[in-house]
Length: 259
Length: 155
Image (cartoon, rainbow over all chains, first blue to last red; front, side, top):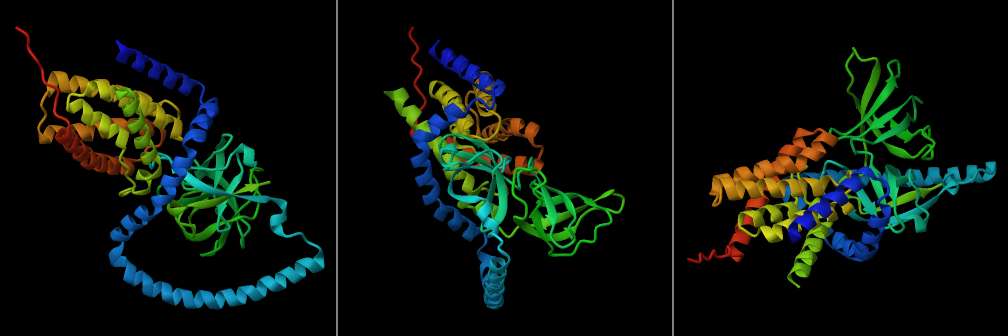
């Protein structure tokens, strides 16, 4: 009898939740305010476990990867030296022209990831910053300067982030050199830019940026680089696969772009 | 007191699910700890505890999940009644192959909601294999630690 009451109560709550989805932020907020510190500690301390397991999985590739990274490190150091010069020159030119720094238009809110969706179907996670910190729905989320997702739901102390790899994610993009626009779609097959003009001449490794056409995120945030064209000749729009330099499954700290 | 302890263990399990288990996917598959514990409890004849895992575990996962609210609760309660029927009417004392088959079917049922939402057979297959392996391990562990309640016949 008592069990029947529990079942009925649970089903009613679940059905009401389904009907009034979007009205549940108060319940979620209350739960988060109680369990947020525990979740944060467990999530952070389990990073080593995750790294350990992935190391076991990839142990045969590690020595090969190490030698490749050593070579890459040397070339990157040379690149950093040249970029420092370019950055210095750029700074001088900005000052001369009276331009504001590109990041002065928005503030960055550093946030820590505290939990992920229980299943891999949804590429979404929760961060420890909410409306009291100024996070709003549709704010862009970046990591190492690259666009990684957007805010979909906000409670008082937490926010939910949809990664660009989520199959429901759709982001307006622009290709930096060819200036072609399109839509970046997520999914488990990887990042794919769609709706690109069939006449567009796209170069390999061309940088992909947010176009700002949605009005939600600022324009010009890098997302990744062009990998290859994957559309067939019969298609009326081009589709290209995009590489993101950010390991989205290994994210720990992200920045919410507060406009 | 006992119910409070079960409730506490369910909360810990749900927190582990969203913080630790999601970090160790195998071929995009992630096992669902509260669901597997609930199924194992049914098959070691502890249905009173299993119903708490179905209701409280489902609701807590829904609160923490970023999927539509209710998906876990409804799936958990549906699975509870389905596998309770399977246990009481069809296989009261399931052998190894039946248990494996039950975990495979249960894993598919758990993923039906998500498959309607996002159709992806690769994740489904990974989840089925991962859930079956971990589920069977949990079942054997619980069976070892909990002995089935004795049935006393009064003449």
